[in-house]
Image (cartoon, one colour):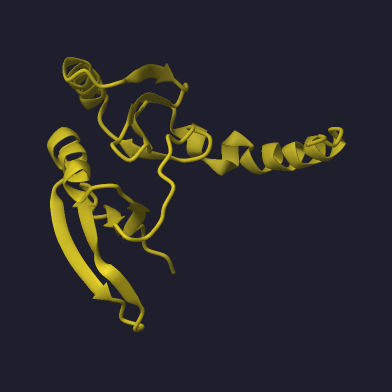
Length: 168
């Protein structure tokens, strides 16, 4: 059985630039680093890869690979394409909003999604980072017994098939 998330890994442009955002700004400690010259399965990594891990309070990590000689298209991600949502306490949400503004960072929000309130930053690699605080009393929003999640998905699938085909 799956116990939880150990880590999610993403590419980064520069490990130190990434560390400054995740450790210095967000407060996630750098807890592990691996320099990889050759994978366990024997694949060479060219000039080497650095794999870094930043730990969340629950023990899980956000991890990054810096692979300077491996092509990768870094682009600003749209929230719908990719975003990393991290849970915070409501007072931390307000503090991080103010901290981001004070440091001259782009900060979007506060967005009220009814069950969470969120703010958004962009990390140095172009990824959207969402800080989300639960709204007390809205726990049922994540309870499939009461929120009709499956019914809504099934309806979406039917409605989607009814839409005319888009011409490219």
